[in-house]
Image 1: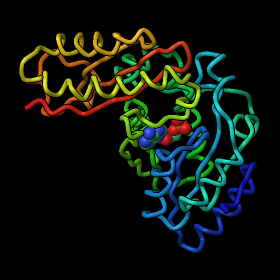
Image 2 (image 1 turned 180 degrees about the vertical axis):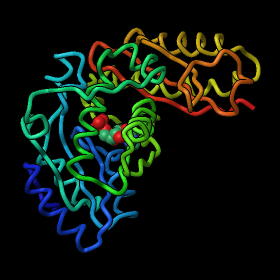
Image 3 (image 1 turned 45 degrees about the horizontal axis):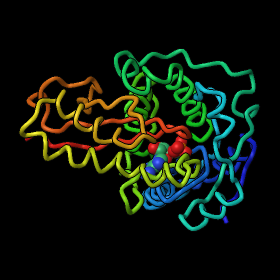
Image 4 (image 1 turned 30 degrees about the vertical axis):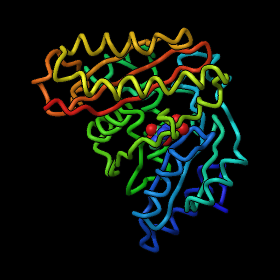
Length: 284
Ligand code: AMP
């Protein structure tokens, strides 16, 4: 079993000893309700470091919707059990007070155009809260390497940008998205889907994957429309946005010639959870 810590000081005592012994520290921040996607990050961390820390903290400052925060699944005992199988050494499960001892003060940081689109546009304040907690966790753990999923493509770009802006010494590593057999991206929120929503949800991936074949024959706008229409054939799914963006700047492209590879990023509303995903398209 990984050793579980709930306080910053206990975790830091263990990590200080490890660092003195010359051990390399890998870190995987999560909000828990762990699935194979999370565990793949932990396995990557275990492969590249001597000690793996996984945090489980449902961060209130990154939720812009109180009901979403309340409903977010929490299952720490099962999580700790799963972490054991993936090679995690330390599980860190802090309270809100432990992370925000002086109140929920947000980091004073801006991400320019990176935060104006997609999740930044539709979830106001989300990235500021996310950056605040990731920075605080980096400060506590001071990892050599930190692992983030490409499933949250914009989050990964923002974390990399934050590390650059603040001059942090952590190396941020992006990991591939793990999917269910039917293509649905694994997510803690999937367990909140009804059986009917779960059955409809793989369409989010299938429609976008098929879009690769449309690219040579259609404009960017036309592909966006085709995918949106296809997904919305299901009355259970409503596309909040589907943007095709430059993977570096995250700005929507107008023409396929702009980049060799583009990212199709989507958010879909159900009557239950909101689902996000993204996919890479080759344009030539
Ligand atoms: P979360 O618990 O949703 O905050 O996610 C914690 C980390 O796991 C983030 O870096 C996510 O991008 C990553 N992650 C979530 N789902 C997946 C997935 N299906 N495949 C790979 N990584 C994932």
